[in-house]
Amino acid sequence: MDTLENSAPRVSVIVVTHNSDAFIARCLASIQHALSEVPHEIVIVDNASVDDTIAIVHEVAANAAIIRNSENVGFAQACNQAARLAKARYWFFLNPDTWAQDHGFGEMLVYAAKNSAAIVGPRLTDPDGTVHKSWDQRNSVCSVLADVLSLAFFLRALRRRPAMQPNCPINVRFLVGAALLIDSKRFRGEALFDERFFFTGEERDLCLRTANNGGRVVYYPHYTITHIGGGGDGHSCFHISQWINSMKTFSVKHGGRGCGLAVRAAFFFYILDYMIAFYVKSIFKRDRMALRNYMLFLRYRQLLRWYWGLIKYDELLYSCAKMKE
Image 1: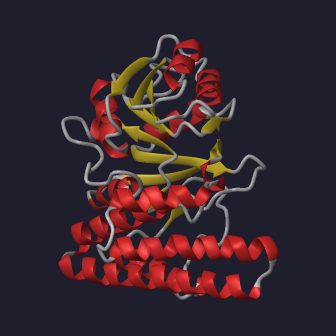
Image 2 (image 1 turned 90 degrees about the vertical axis):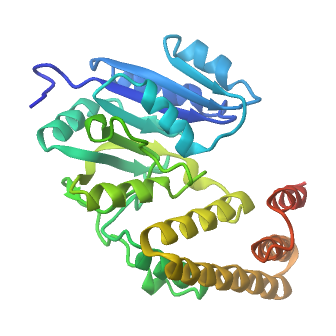
């Protein structure tokens, strides 16, 4: 077995960027500090950034290998590009809007090696220290369907989530993809992520495939990554549409056409119910909240039109962007 005391596992840190200049400096500085005693390399895949992301990468991580795509090819494809280039035994996929804890990364590597873990996910927290629910014992088409329906009809009781934060590593079925340590030996010679997932859902698919093939998927609470992505717009047209597309792909892939149709129907009610809820709130709320709720109603109305094929995806994103102006 590899240990840090003898023949330490080397790690390739893989970061996919897209207009990430607000975050990337802190992300790269923190992970280099966390890995100061661990042999490592950094691989950056940039999805056609038009800001200062690449200039900052050159400044903060001068030795990083950089792949520059001429267009945004999506997260899954970009990760696969990096995995083909990475040389280390372990791959550590890290979102650019994160920063790493100073100490403990080496111990996580030792744990992964000693316990033959295929995928390990560290604890994720908000900047204020609030722990994310970044793992789940459920990962199936049925759990996706239950989650969508519970959101559609505002039935939070149906969304069974981890009730307590574990204080030791546990086997799980799902890990959030903001920070994942992956044993490359299990995936050499094959595409790691399914590139049908453009953005979101690819880690759910990977975790399910890995667990179904006998690989250990482990939540490791002894090392912490701070992730600020969760503070974004939860009603973003881009994020909602990508989530919908990904979950439909996931459901058809792992449950067949019938499951795909069921999930598609659930998302119809999800969009419709939120549209109605925000419209009702816009009537009974006052001042700024009334305006905000009315704008969200318009956003979900556009999402519904896109869902029924009445407008194209580019029109959806353009119209939602105009609403923010």
